[in-house]
Image (spheres, rainbow, N blue to C red):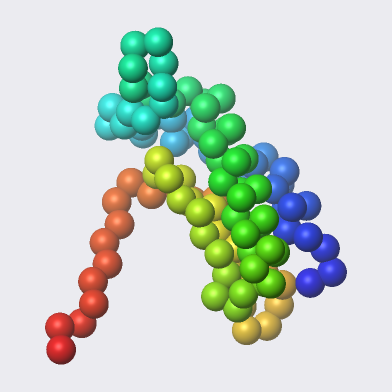
Length: 108
């Protein structure tokens, strides 16, 4: 990797559909942003600011921990910033919005 993943942040931010995420959060009444009335559905500006924070934090952790082969992720509020690593090729920075997720281990 010749360049820091910080350089990918503007491209990810530009391509991510914050308006769509905001519509889903409004529909689901997904409240986590603080307002004068308490918790509220985050504005598009709140979503953008939080995503930018998570992307920067994810890259910072990935680089400060020595570029782990397992990558890195930072998530909160339905948004997840990820450094995806591959056996061949450069790592990628991703921003994901999760509405639902499930995981389990095999019963042994």
